[in-house]
Length: 106
Image 1 (cartoon, one colour):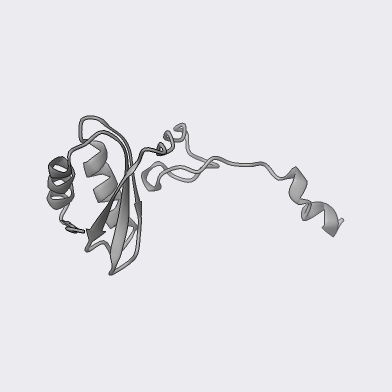
Image 2 (cartoon, one colour; image 1 turned 30 degrees about the horizontal axis):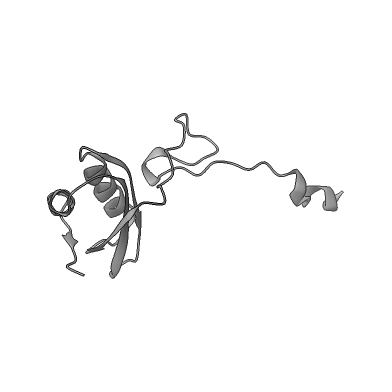
């Protein structure tokens, strides 16, 4: 019986969602589109937690032409911001700054 509970082949694959949408198993929203292969990466400084990530993702996603914005958090370090779609560096810098963080110059 214990072997049946650990049967990996019969486990359901659940979609992943962004940090602001809730978890994949109970979210009522459909998952956001994945970042395309033509994504652009930026480095953001000053993020320390999931709330910081949500603020930056929301601010950048509001830029016209941005299809997706995802942050890979490195608490207290340089986090990666990955953007799918089109946005100028100036627009991204403005959105990140308005959220209270710093876009690195590298």
